[in-house]
Image (cartoon, rainbow over all chains, first blue to last red; front, side, top):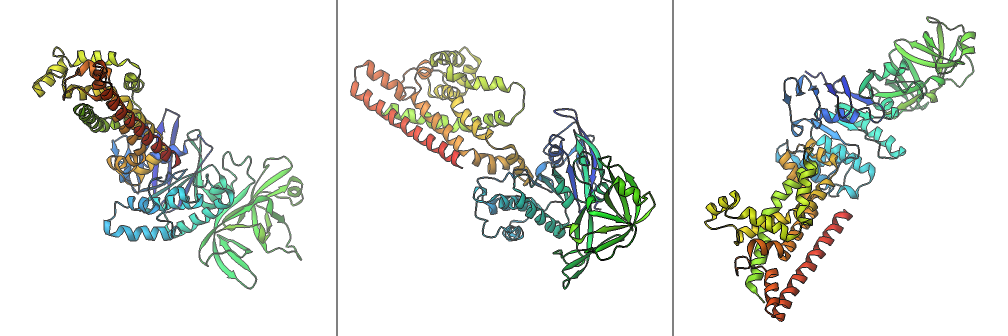
Length: 362
Length: 220
């Protein structure tokens, strides 16, 4: 039975950690928090590399570490793929050699074919005979990912996988990871201090601060409630949610997306009908109206209902929590506008969303 | 030219390197990665032969190897002859005085391996033994080679300790260094010069090797 990963770590030294969380099977769970919040230590404990006073790690109900019973599966026997922050590729081995070395759990006869398969999958064709020093940053990252996948892992651990690369490369690597996840549906833990990674890649979120969990839940729920601790203060309120590609209207160069009762027309998204894409919609991009407007360049007029209104970060602004069907959105308006529209919990209202304001990530 | 002495020196050097390197590697690994109490003390102990006068080291070894000491008695019952003034005694003394030359280069090489690389070895499915074999040994190879070269060269040149523990028995404990001293005492300048030149060449060669290894390690 696939129940995902269940983790409990408690230690007093060298720094205090007291954490318990679950990562659902086949999905990406982000461990998010500032540096020094204990994220990497948690990954190392899951891989069996870090021992602490109290550790319980179970994958699909199978105990990997349990300090109470003394159970401990040695690191090299855990079906875990670990992508280290600086990749930690072996400098003296070629990429093919590193992949072959990680395939010891498979019969020797299968290994060459599997190495070739991984090299193709990670677009490292022609680079197998090279050592890490002869690869670019992005290639090194893909090589590290290939090496982690070579283990046929049941859990993929990614420690700040994009920290070492520049912004442009980071975005392309994120796409890579989304595609990979679509293909393999691995139970993945993504350690990051960049909320962009969370908003684009993760379905679940565990927020850590000084060795404690300060929030946990789905990314959609936490962003829709603008309730990610530490982030709500500086990140513009924006909802991140998964939407299905319902139709491609190539003539109009538009894509129709759906999530719950929400329907959105957006500029063409490069994804097949039926696939899921991550969308983000910033609260400041959502206009509220009491009547259906005419003669605008607008694509999306959504029937919404006000759920709650909070004072956001500034006294002059109101963050309006909306529901469109079962899907929640946020709208940031002035206090004056909220007064004029007589917004109150329960009020029906129209949410106007420009097609170009929807950020789709596929 | 005392070929017997040169042969003995080379034999002593090789035996020392072969016996010392595996032990020193384990010690170096433990010092580089271990988190045990007393590590600093052991580190200091290993370095001690570097700064102690060879005659002092030799004196203590002579006492420790003597027929009155437990160590001397154990070896005498095993070997059938006393440890002092024997080749085996020289080997044992040589192992002790070369400890820093063998341990320190390997310890530095091992400590230079990023911790994440060692973690990665385990996460790639390598057992602790295989991680040493496939990752740690190859990555610390320049350090291991430096340790071998330094130990060998230093064994050839050691004088004070050899004299104290081994004396100067031809074919048993008279090494090249001792032979050079002997020849100088006997005013046999040509023989002393020839043997000194051999040691000089070996030393230059050894340094050239270690330097090129260090450069190769640095450029990787």
